[in-house]
Image (cartoon, rainbow, N blue to C red; front, top):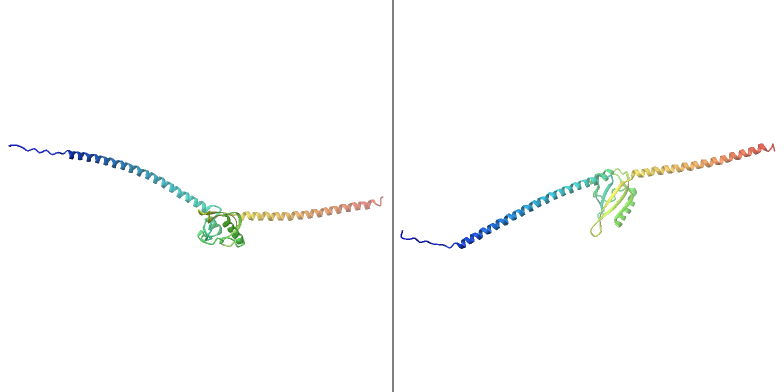
Length: 231
């Protein structure tokens, strides 16, 4: 070997670049890890919110189911009439069963369909009162069963209005008072019968008083006649 040639290369910039890249990668990994943790937390939060929302929705469905069951099976009869179309848009099962219909046989019919002929005119007056005031209080009417027989009812109604105050439809409650009316009629019959008996009794007592007076007068007269010869 006669000699050697040694070459030196400056890698300062490369080292600096590598160091910067390493630092950048570390920062990037840190940011990725931080974002991943944030996403995990967000996912956990969303999962919790979904669980809560699902529970709320389930509770609402159960509440709606209970309300619908209550609406359908309450002892009172419920019905709604579209104020503009003047058609029945909803009724509960109690009303349908009470009148001998199916619910679908009632919905869509005109508003006076269920009223007995004996009270149609009164029902029209009550409906006009509802349109004017948005309510009805304790109106006595008669509904008509499918077989034509009459059901005495007490009607109370309120209105559901739009944002401008215009009536959209009614919320009507009918209470069957047929038995109450029957008892009232029975009491009236008994009262009339008692009044007749009282009149008859008064007449009898009056007649007895007259006869009593006549007997007394006769006794006095007879006694006087018997005493006159002695005197």
